[in-house]
Image (cartoon, rainbow, N blue to C red; front, side, top):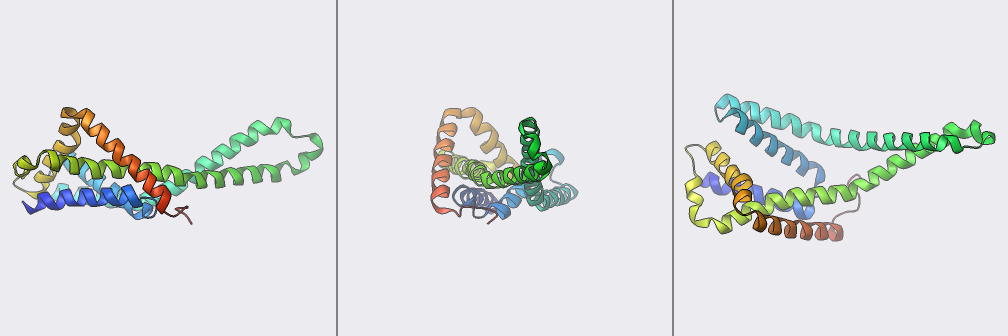
Length: 207
């Protein structure tokens, strides 16, 4: 029984941190979220045997460790690609008398665009963490409020079966049964999270 409340508490706490402090704790929280998501996905696909749990844990750990690196590389590569596209578009308009300086100008353009992309990550991080955190925070909370009498029916023979039951009820059945209620609550929570992050979180996640 205790594992039911521990799991629900973990979901809501992680969701709350992502929702309201996502930009401040972006890197560790994204890694933790990726671990939880990957772990649950693998358990759902493979099962709850000891070997399955070990595979799920290792998979979650690998994904969590790679998350930060992939994000940084992705932002850099997207910025570089956009800069190169801008250079290609601007090339026909460079006067011939300035062609000897064109490579320096191209390099400056690419660097500036990369910097702009990095700066824009702050807004994207705010939106994505508030969205993910809003779902993780609002849906377990809503489930506990609307189904408090039937919570004990989700307890399985093992903690892992209990987790699978809860995931099924919260992230599948509740969405299907109460789509308007879930959508309204989640959107309201996400909006509040975005406002709080903009007002209270540090400006740059890489700063």
